[in-house]
Length: 236
Image 1 (cartoon, rainbow, N blue to C red):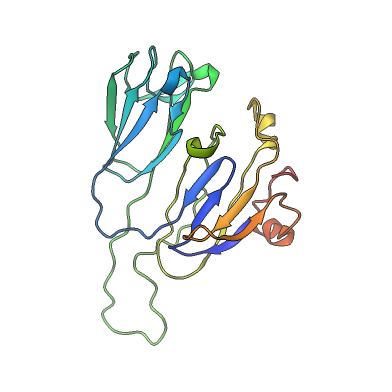
Image 2 (spheres, one colour; image 1 turned 90 degrees about the vertical axis):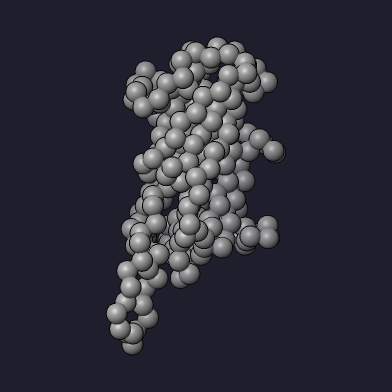
């Protein structure tokens, strides 16, 4: 789905992903984000994906036994952090200082899909003063005019357990954004039980529906094709 977005629009992907766009604060305060490990005896991290700022900490809390929090992907640990096998009541924390996307998994259950991701946003550039007024509009100094491709894979849940991912759009000028919910084509990459028919909804900050897209060729086909980011499956 292709649309215009500004810093105050919230975007909700109704089936597998919830994305919030918000204004970037000029003052960053370190925070701690909590993730449950194996809640209710399940083999999942909840939430699957968290979005933080550099300097923030993620704290994992064990809700069942015999799990690890290990940086990397199953069979390919990065060595960035590893809690070792812990049991109910244990906690493990790691502070992320650099921007990037950091995957992690449970060593005993990684092959069964117990994995998660931490998305650390890039730092806001320092504004550069303009010595003299310009007759043309001066670009917002907080805008980093760098296009980004942000993607993540999530386990689909429902209701109050729907998974959340996020990205940040700064500045006040409208921008074109392409949002994709990829489901059935993931089967070609070894993903078991991919979502068969994802749906995207674009909602305003008050929750009102702006537009939606079920199958990408039904609406905006020419615009999406022109972007070069068209899905490979008509149901996506």
